[in-house]
Length: 419
Image (cartoon, rainbow, N blue to C red):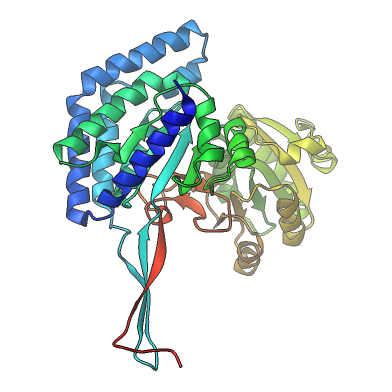
């Protein structure tokens, strides 16, 4: 395969399809999504068969059980995928909303109206459900998508895309609205990142640090995404102990491998004197390894020594780093130096301190008295998310339908000219 010619053609086909989908009404888009859900159910046996090919290859390559579990599709998971599509139908259409309206003294009427981004490139790994989530979110927001999944799920992704394209064809729509890059050659990814600025409007990377860093380093196309989730919990001296124990345990151990898992625990020194032992016991009983600074080790000898690198490490495992701080200001300073701008939470009963933390911490998501594991589009009421963004421009935090739109100004007059 000539990658340049192939990817150039994929880009041209997406631009052509984009003009069509932008004209669809909300009813048309919702009917298409319902048709996609039906098609996925109809093609279930073929999808499971294709997925089994990927599973067999993964086992042959000695892939970990965790990765194989992420990859696996069965009747229940396919039904959940179909239901997730139907859930998107229930969400409001983000396109065509009037975001701002004014009438000028000269009679001009100016509206800022939400519109689709256009062509979205999505580069992701492992989980084949992302193929469907990304496709239907793009469609609902009036966009087309070029998907490049991981080689480990190539057969599964191909089968899911065929089901989606069957629904597009059934609805007399361009099947190239959703395209899968039909090669595992990494040169295709390089070409998407560096050479498709004239056809791809934005790229969304979903995967591990290695993938995201490559995208950030190489891309000449705008990116929506985050590199790491170095999430902090700050326990203020006013924190309720019972509240703190259950939030810390959940934020670290509910699911250790997700980007919203807490990685560093900052605790007021005064609070730690009476309560650090209880926090450590709670984490230890959950199977968590604890590393900490000298001050924390002096209080509890179960805490292992933390190196400088621990403060900027995303463990994605049952490991947490603890540092004692003087007050909220020192906690905010630590987060500013070592954080990744993802999610931070304060546990405090003092509302004034909590407000100070919420206002001063410059991360995409800042929380009070709750678990960082709520950093998720579904939990925010956005439906499925296409990813989490830690950037400051365009979308920030969980990127749902609204994050897949931009806006334009529509100006209406009756003959006005500028003097």
